Structures are given as structure tokens and as C-alpha cells.
Amino acid sequence: DADVTQTPRNRITKTGKRIMLECSQTKGHDRMYWYRQDPGLGLRLIYYSFDVKDINKGEISDGYSVSRQAQAKFSLSLESAIPNQTALYFCATSDFYGTGKGPGRTDTQYFGPGTRLTVL
Amino acid sequence: RKEVEQDPGPFNVPEGATVAFNCTYSNSASQSFFWYRQDCRKEPKLLMSVYSSGNEDGRFTAQLNRASQYISLLIRDSKLSDSATYLCVVKDDRGSTLGRLYFGRGTQLTVWP
Image (cartoon, rainbow over all chains, first blue to last red):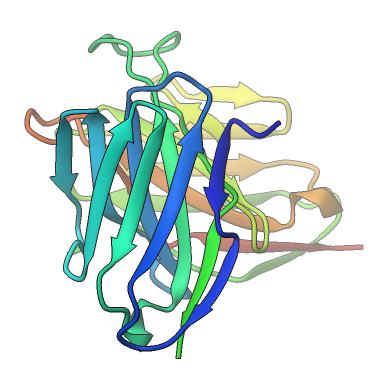
């Protein structure tokens, strides 16, 4: 079974609709992230959460909200979807081992398979 | 100015070729650097971390030049399976946003037979 799962994998919706994308992880990581990816723009951070009580805005949070229901679950909502929110959305998790540097310290982010969202 | 800049390519090389990608980063305080690989329509996955002394993993070599604030990835003896987009990634080591990763737009590589 995948360590990071996202539902749905594909979604087509209409302008103005409320959409929720869900992410679950079994890695036991405290940190979770939501990114969107657009052609030519790369990955951009929407929101991130360093633990259940911590939510932070990323680069492009306008039009989005998140909820960290538990350590393992982090959902992204589009309150009123618009066409320029059509993109590939990725959830990611990471663990963080102190502030040591160099080999042996890991900040690897593990990504879910992505949700392809189309807003008509 | 973006935190991480990289040439989007595409790079088209024959099997067996050596190819190198560079990227530059803007935050001189950054301490952690990575290369991720992303196959078409798939999620990014960590390829390798980049350490100050440079590091090698099989056919892949990563280098860091702190003075010039650039990171490189060298792929030797390219394989068809190396075709992917390579993402240069810099970790934010500053206090309030400690732990965030900044992704470059990616460099597309196609290896042809």
C-alpha cells in the first residue's frame, strides 16, 4: 500500500463549486504540505503544517483553505473553484531530525500520486 | 526573483551521453540542497541530496558551489530510463519557515536510443 494517498485522483468540476481534496499518510510524519503544479511554473506551495496544531500559508494560499484533522490527514479545500485553479495538486509529508547538517540528516519529502483537478 | 532557477531544457541526448544540469539559488543562508526526479504525470521523488563536499551515487554526481550559489547534477552513461524532469530543490533553513522546500521549475531530459 502507498504511504501517501490522495483522493480523488481526478476531478472535473464547475466554476463556483466547493471542492475538497484529501490526503492521508501512514509514514507517521508530523509535517504535511499541499502543492500545485502548473506547466512551466513548477511546484508551488499552497499550505503546510508542521504538526496538528500548526497551519501556515505558502506562496499561493488565496482561494484555498486547509484542515489538519489528525497527524495522518491533511485536506485542501477550494471554497469556490475558478478555472485558473485547474492544476495538478500534490500532497507531501516529511520528517525532520533536528538541525544537524550533512549526511545522515534527512528532510526528504514524500509525495502522494497527485490529484488532477479541472475547473470548467 | 525566484528562490531557485534552473534551465527548463529540454535536453535531448543519446544513450551513453553525459549530461549536466545546473541551478542557482538566491538565499545564501540555505544549507540543504536536493535533486528530485519527476516522471511524466507522476509525483516527484528524491534522487539525491547534495552535500558540500559533492557526492556520487552510481552514475549520478551532485556538486554544490556555495560561493556562486549553484548546484549541479551530472549524469554519466545516460540510459533511456533517465528520461524525466529533474527538479532542483533548496531547503529554507531560516527560523520561521524552517523546513520548507523551494522547487525549481525542473529541467526536462529525454534520452534517445
